Every structure is written in structure tokens, then in C-alpha cells.
Length: 116
Image (cartoon, rainbow, N blue to C red; front, side, top):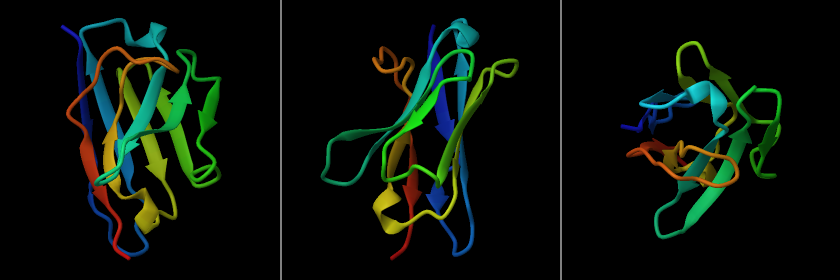
């Protein structure tokens, strides 16, 4: 059974750079590309970042480029999103669906709130 569990969200304190985690199980994690996708209140899903299975290929939406860093630890079956200099526009529920650029499994997401 494919399982994806996002964590690390919450209310972002001033000067803090959160790191989101995604724990994967039930499949061969190291052979799949992964993505971070977010959904702000009242808005649709927005792709944020993707990383291919080897970890060598990465890309980001323009609004987070230079601030966010996607990474993965295949030995631990984990995906990460380091969020530096978060701003209120980054507030959303963050998901780590399996696949890049296409997705086939989702977790429950983790809420990230950046105060204005």
C-alpha cells in the first residue's frame, strides 16, 4: 500500500525557515520522481517543486525559486522541502504526491501558515 505522510508544517515564526518532510512507504521510493504541490485557501492546486528519482534533476515554480530547496534521502524514503524566507503567499496546505510531473498518489498534506 502506497503511503505518503507530510509533516513539518504549522505557524511559521518570524525568522524561522521550516523544513517540510514527506515519509514514503509501500513502493520503491528511489525509482520515482516526487513533487511538492500546495493549495492555498480558496485556490486550486499549485505545483511548487519536483525532483527526479536520482535527485539530480530539480525544478521550482518561479515564485519560490532561490528560496525553497527540494531534496530527498532515498535511503530513508524521505522527501524534503526547505522553505527559506517564507512569505504570506506561501501559506497553503503542502502535499508530496508521487510522480513528476504527473501524480498518482497523495498524502493528507501539512498546513503551512506564514503571518502577514
